[in-house]
Amino acid sequence: MRYRLEKLYSENQIKERIDELCLVISQDYAGSDLVLVCVLRGSVYFAVDLTRRLTIPFTLDFISISNYGHETGPLGIVRITKDLDIPIAGKQVLVLEDIVDTGLSLNYLLRNLKTRHPSGLRVCTLLNVPARRLVEVPIDYQGFELPDVFAVGYGLDYHERYRNLMDIYALVRETD
Ligand code: IMP
Ligand code: MG
Image (cartoon, rainbow, N blue to C red; front, side, top):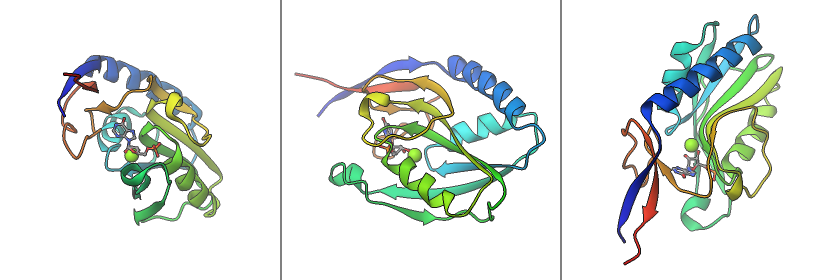
């Protein structure tokens, strides 16, 4: 199978959009006890750039989940492979996602985090692909809405490749 990369968003467009998100998030969470939850591994690049431009105090923590559904079909079997290090009870939690596609991972993650009784629980995703949604999930902040494509770059991988690309691309299958 051969693939080509088609650019969707440039490094500069991503930076500008993150600046806009940071303005809104810094206003919305002014004066609150904010915990940012970065979902490993794809969201690391987004989380680093976003957190550096926030103008409010926050705590950053990491969680890792694996979704076996992506390998075997849309089963949505999700589990936590690395949990948060800090308790989030009574905190304002904002989940930082790279992409919300089927919504299965995020749906599981939100249900799990809710049991820990945060005072608020919201989602900020860089990319949103509503056309591929299988379960409804609330998105409070989003960078860009994508059509039904597989995205790579800026943290997003295809079998661990392309994470380091500065821009975001669609991975397009070549027909020959
Ligand atoms: P879900 O389908 O919304 O559960 O997506 C779960 C995870 O799969 C995302 O957080 C990504 O890490 C990965 N993923 C989903 N769609 C894409 C894509 O288009 N490119 C790269 N990774 C993806
Ligand atoms: Mg992810």
